Image (cartoon, rainbow, N blue to C red; front, side, top):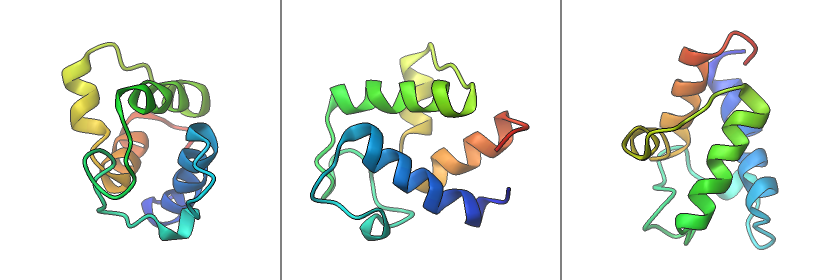
Length: 88
């Protein structure tokens, strides 16, 4: 899977895992900040995103500093997934 085909899948997973009922995955911009932006995500949501990465892609994030670098936006998450999995 390439990055452009992963992004819509990832957006759908974000909406599903975070139970964002009022947000359509297509409304999330690739470079939209996940935290501090219009999505209104908080620290609990960041834990859910870490769970998403582990369950869906087998990626474990144990270091909060590493998580902050990965969970910036959809672009960062997708690039990290592709760089760190063989199944994406």
